[in-house]
Image (cartoon, rainbow, N blue to C red):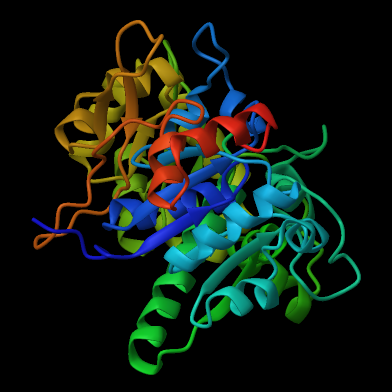
Length: 394
């Protein structure tokens, strides 16, 4: 079964997650993806190290399916390699500052001069316009400035989510934009630049509370895990763990009230609508908390599921790894990696297609694993590659 993007070549000059994972998804859709790294390895290769060499779990997750090339594009000979690569490519992905792109010859005008119909997908911390456009940033900066950390906090201060949701959402948004640009090029023959930002992605995902604030000026404050637009919606301690319950909508609230033996609350004006229940959520959470404290996780979840109420256990990473449903969904790919004892459980892109296989196919490349192969493909002889290695160009 051929890939949907078969015949499309992507150059991944990205760093960390927003750029590289965008390219990873394109690779799962069938594109050939070449990951270009620093000679000693780019920083994201070593995030969350899991083997002696320092290669990390993050790179194994976002680097799979790619070919690996090491290159120093700041040297004249390296710039020539970039030009040869671009001539063979359809898409360049680079989540780097504008001045870095220009220094590497990866700004859109430079790329377009090499190949007229090239597509540049460029993500940055704050985008290419506005007073913050030259600022650098990571996922946490997006979380902080989106309002999400504020609304997830409580009287003890704001709370950042450990998982980099801003990075991954920016990567997926960038992939959507790139796919649209590929379709546009197929129709018109035109390339273009596709831009995205961590700040923009985080503002989108956290936008509802900003809309409410702008229109109603409620000046809400964070309530930690307790939701403010329905209830009960919170995390609750059981005899042996924690669970999360979300009751949203009148039918669910009716089932919950009957399960709790609080049918009279169905006529209480404090709990009439979702927003009313959110505004008085502390009362509902206290009742739910008492009920959960008398049960184990499995007991509470069994009773809530029997009543068709949305709930789930609060997992540790190990508990997620051991969950049988995750395995049954086919989302875990056991992949070998040089120097790794056992196999790494790589999580597949959570989309399946009936007419295409877009699952994980190959492990992430070791540092510079395909450099010789790719350089020879570009027309360099073995002697020339050796000379470039001596000069630390590749």
